Length: 172
Image (tube, rainbow, N blue to C red; front, side):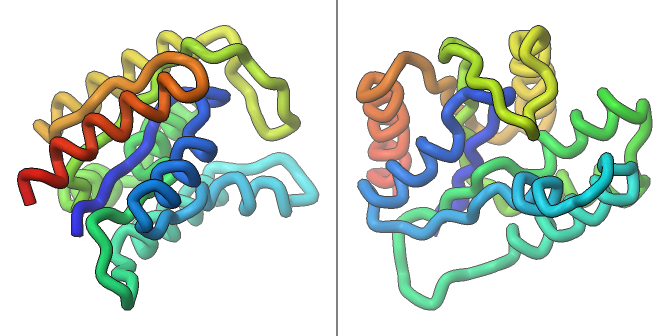
């Protein structure tokens, strides 16, 4: 089973893509933890909240489903959280770099910010999506883990991801 992380700036269709790929490949997916966590807060989030999110993501990355499947899809992971820390707080927990290096991700699908911004109370960065995209790309490349840039709208976006993952599946 290959662990696939879907990453990208806000409002780039990560959750939609995870659900579609999960259905197409009949594989499980792990929803974005931060959205539920931040959405449940009755106050602005803090550094400690982001660290709690990162710790939960570490646990999620170790989860193995009971049924065999070719993939498990993750709607975001620690690279996005690292950038979130550095962008908002200019620092991150010392344990996090090692956790990122040890993530069992086999391939990244990096979503290009070519979809229109959809406003949402939990989204914060409509004007720096391209900058964040390049930052995520740099982080992935530094890890040396293969990635595919996913672009286009609707079926085109989904088909690009399916094509990349079908090639990976053939390598199994």
